[in-house]
Image 1 (cartoon, helix red, strand yellow):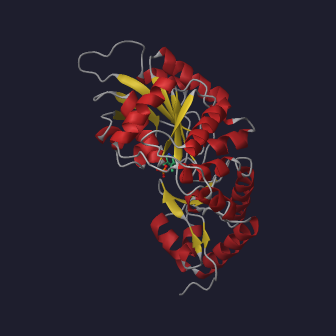
Image 2 (cartoon, helix red, strand yellow):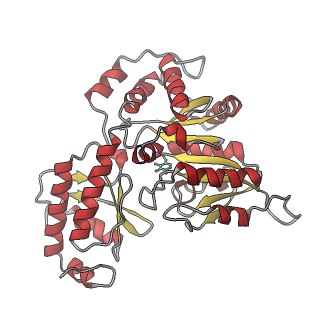
Image 3 (cartoon, rainbow, N blue to C red):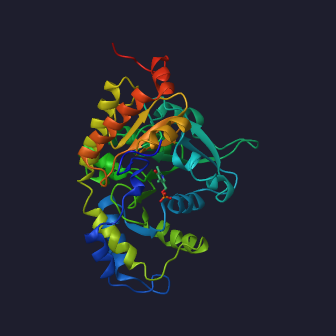
Length: 361
Ligand SMILES: *Cc1c(COP(=O)(O)O)cnc(C)c1O
């Protein structure tokens, strides 16, 4: 069947957001310099702004969140160190193993024993006793956290709980890196400033290119010394850009939109409750990610796309991500299309009767 729906509703990711007119204007008129030779004033302004939003001394623009995480791992780990991270975080499953292959770290995944995406302080303490490793044991030197936790459905870790984890990490002599690709979403969901979520961390990376709508860019923040070394590591990786102000200008516009993420959260709640009404098992979204249990996510994505609704797969589930380029009425439209699909698709009717679904009526 050809797609009978004129407009595709793209819920694969909040990275599909396109820069709007205001952002493109800001990019076109950005004041620039050579950010590798000496400095680019708009880059510098973006970095100061993000450092201050995160309550950390210094920050550095990065071409991607993946590179920001990699640079942090390269600086925190020596070859053969081990690092702890909650199961299914981006660093473990979505970065092609660079934490191991480039930064030389052995990953030790932590169970989500305190809730979705959230390891307990006890599980950190258990793996990391405050002593030197024996001759045949790895040195565990780093704890990585992810807030919000993408694969756990945009799950939020509240500041008090994060503080307990970073406290235990300190006691064990671990440094802490926070992957805050969607830290903005966590802050908005909790109603706290982003700086409330960076207590006790040595470094944090935040994305400008997801819900905030910039076309490119992440920012890595930490101490002055850490950021000085991060600049050298970024250069090693070929991540220095010249007239980066054009990209930084988009980032500055993006930062104006943090509060608007609340609308994406509302859309996600609407989508989740609509899917639940159709008999699906979904998470209760805290932010902008809805996960649905399906027997075969790959096939479900292909079938659903024929109805003009695009989703992605994560940890074996169907993932819908709401964002600024999909309106609330478009979310309702997506629900209507999903309903049509379920009625038409024999395989999904059967799926709904399987134990994976709570069938109503
Ligand atoms: C998207 C994402 C990244 C990486 O960002 P890119 O800019 O796509 O490289 C890192 N961590 C998390 C949790 C993400 O969702």
